[in-house]
Length: 281
Ligand SMILES: [Zn+2]
Image 1: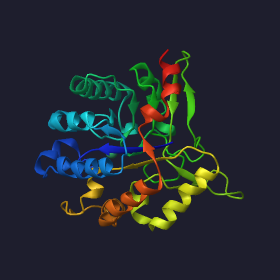
Image 2: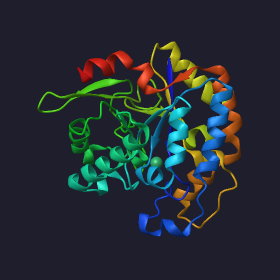
Image 3: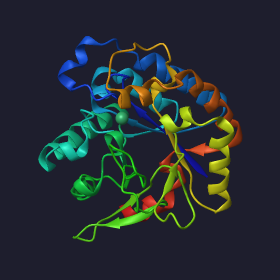
Image 4: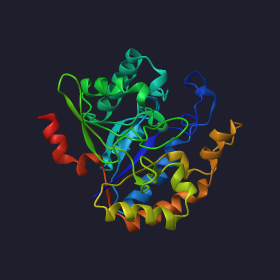
């Protein structure tokens, strides 16, 4: 069974604008999440929603609606600052704040985490111990690809158990990648959603996921709410940021509609239920 997840954040939180400037922008996360919730209900998809702490603070009703619709709520941190730019102390503080906000709204323990922009890299592996220490049982922040902002190209592509020095264990579940054959070792084609879902024609996206399936491997795909909101404001950004942020936004919804017909999706909580149970024991 495959996992579908959503990094629940505003369009301006996903483009590296510092938190102290967020007040000037139009909030659109409620309406774009409603589109995703409607689509998932239509195709019987349940997902893991990695909610940003700041979104939980500003839109408590939205978090409760997502929860009541049967989706899993996990954390995307609080401020959307990249993990390798945070001190371990601030990372822990923000993580706790986001977990407390979410748990007070859902009444359920937060088990999962995804770092902003997949920024658990070689420079921020210290974050894994803090996650486990704060009760997180699975993480989906290590992306085994080359990218200017993130990635550990030779990291495991498939779910693996990470053990910290004190013996505590956590499950790491990367989003989908397809491995290129030798002579290109550790070269994985990203195909787990986000900008790549918008960039690839759907037939290619589907073919890559089918090839992963043929290998008998796990598939995890994600999107952001702003990716189903092509009308959100266009602002001037450095080219490499704006190119991926605004590219082909109008294609996301129709591609998701096809994806939901071609594949079955459930939350991490359900797909890895037995693994998570043994980790929490
Ligand atoms: Zn994000």
